[in-house]
Image (tube, rainbow, N blue to C red; front, top):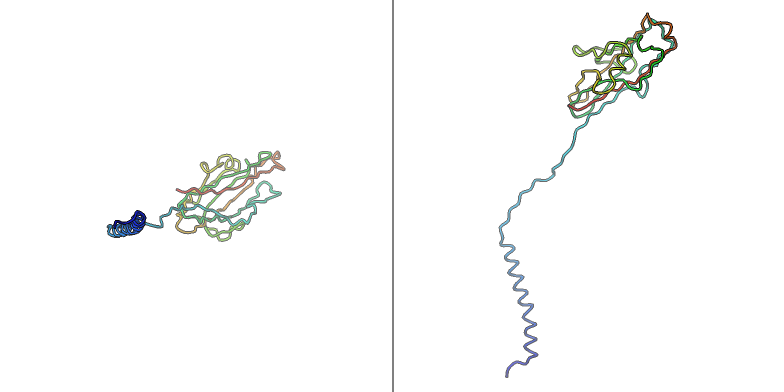
Length: 198
């Protein structure tokens, strides 16, 4: 007696799971049978170095001098520290310049770089054997010429391999030839040290 249509349909439905299982088994065996090779290079990164300057002034002006007269003189020192990781070149220049009654033309300024001094006091200051002379001239000439990094003065070039400190000595003298017309005159300016990597 031939199978009924119903039993034929039922047998077909039973064949689908068997066929699917066989196909999955073949795919699985094919996947595991493939050759494979890998190589990795991980944890790649980029970082940049730094240029960093600080000084020991604690936010106080280096010069606050009043009642000067012809012939007055003195000196003040400040220490500047480079703690950057890149080699750099440091320049000194003037900012925020104000002069009245031409006083800046009658005050001479000498700037020397060296070691051993701290803010205010020049006790222990020692000029460098070479490259110590930074500037010599009037306040007016300095503030008029050294107005930014490109025209700044100095020859300090920190290596970036370790923290380095330079002391700067500022000597001043009020000319004995300062005229009466300069009485009450004022000369003010800021001092800026700037480092740029080389």
